Image (cartoon, rainbow, N blue to C red; front, side):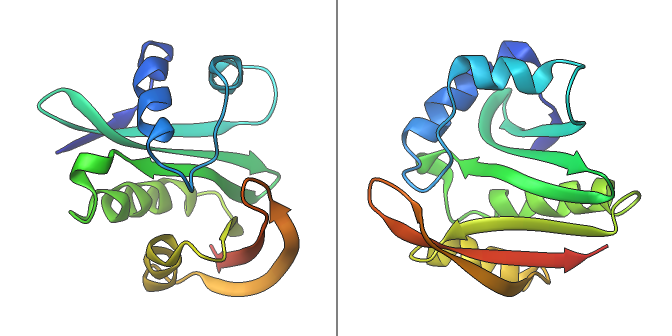
Amino acid sequence: MHIRWATPGDISSLLEIEKDALTAAHWSREQYQSAFSQSGLPRILLVIEENTVIQGFLVARAVGQEWEIENLAVAAAVRRRGLGQRLLAHFLRLARQQAASISLEVRDSNRAARCLFEQSGFIACGRRTNYYRDPEEDAVLYSLRG
């Protein structure tokens, strides 16, 4: 397994992975292209590869000294192998160099993601009622001090 910075050439792979990840944020090709642009908020886009095939990704953005994890997804065929944990740990090493805190929200029913974040030190700190659609569901807010 190898973690590297994502490139615009990876967008098709990111879209393919998220298509099978029902609880991931579903972005358009244009949203991913915008994430790679130099304008706007600074972002970190990481991919994890196995034999040069992208198996997962993480997208986060900086707002001042706070980082927000916007998306984390792993290909269906390789879930439960620790790839999400490896991506998250790599991101945390990068972000902690400049972040006062790191936040995210996750579907209340997404137990795997919630366990991953809690095991990595994130603390549940709030809830957004009916935040998600299709299906409608609450978001649990998490925070980690840098």
